[in-house]
Length: 551
Ligand SMILES: Nc1nc2c(c(=O)[nH]1)N[C@H]1C(S)=C(S)[C@@H](COP(=O)(O)O)O[C@H]1N2
Ligand SMILES: [Mo]
Image (cartoon, rainbow, N blue to C red):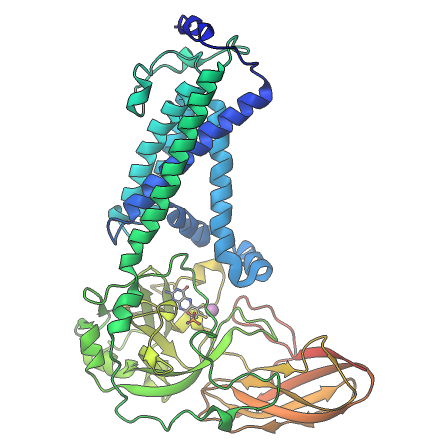
């Protein structure tokens, strides 16, 4: 088999075959393979709405499988950048793996080829393990095949001391053949290097393949853009509520001092927390909401049917369980939707059911007690947010919202199904991951101004912030400066007991460093818990303090 070497030696000048050069060439083989495979996969993903990008599929499985400590670490360290960082990590690991395979391809082409095939298999397995089903795996299959072909094509060009399988190299990727790994098992360094002609040919091939791969990936991304739900969303004309609320007058409810939080959170400013690496792009024409499980009659609603119903408006503050004391994972909006109680009454909830589960098109689930739908709190299938159709990031076309419960147990976005079940029969998404099954919102208060470690001049400054205890309501907020006595802050009006309440207290600051602490009391008379608790499993507690530097 090694007779081919002689033909190569005769062509052009021989090049020293150093370790570094081999490494670089191996890296080029591996990276070229990975880029070609990903490019093919991304391009394929652009063909059909149900197809999915392997990178996001692998990332999704990482998110699902990540242990709680890793998740906490990621959120605490990277905040809302955790998604791009996850995608970046997947790509870096993939690149390192690819480089390893490329280097390996010199001495163990069969193993490297199998490794390339493994790319595709991993992508397919990740896709099938998700909610997309077999169709979601198609791009990975295509990527895997291209990976195998490209690996062999580039390896034969990079290491020409290998058998001449590339009979017609210019014709395209070499055909896949099964072969014995022993054929390529070189003991010791090959005696032959690449001639400069070969080297140029190889580099040109690797560069061309990479370029085509990047182009294919970009085209695939663009193609997928035509599935953007924003297109459908732009066509929606939102009906009015049957009994509209009075116009939102944020000034009435706002602390209204520099550095305080607006009473209503704009859709653009509203915090976003979810497990979705790629925001689900729901097609309105085919979307339905199913009511299933322990009901007398299963029901299905189209978007048009929901819009045609009597709609209710409600001002509610949504809060994330991951919010730390002093954190900003809370927002207030005017929501528009169909009362959950009406939909459930039509379906007929069976008496032994105790849990309502909201399932998303992306497989996410929340779950909350049946009882909360019977009482007077707001519980909606939401279709509108602050006067607009629900934004895509916040769950278009529909989401759940239950006042007084943390978002993770109540607020399923991209809602596809409401299943009536039992807590002893179904665990929602976060329960096996160490979070509570029952999660009413804990009373919390936050100082927004003065800013933590901010510098202010001596004299009178407002201390202001927000406090929340959704469904119970806030009756009192007290402020303590250093070791002084607790002083009542002025409470601003609220539209109802399901929103946060703003508070303000003017204070005469003397020079020096001062610690400001606040604490709230809800309408039941319960004081905000002082003991510090981390968000997991059922929400953070503790009094918020900031240090301000006065000169
Ligand atoms: N489909 C889906 N819905 C979801 C989540 C999710 O990960 N996937 N996260 C929940 C959590 S933890 C919160 S706090 C709220 C946040 O809603 P927002 O992003 O609109 O603020 O959505 C909830 N709904
Ligand atoms: Mo959350």
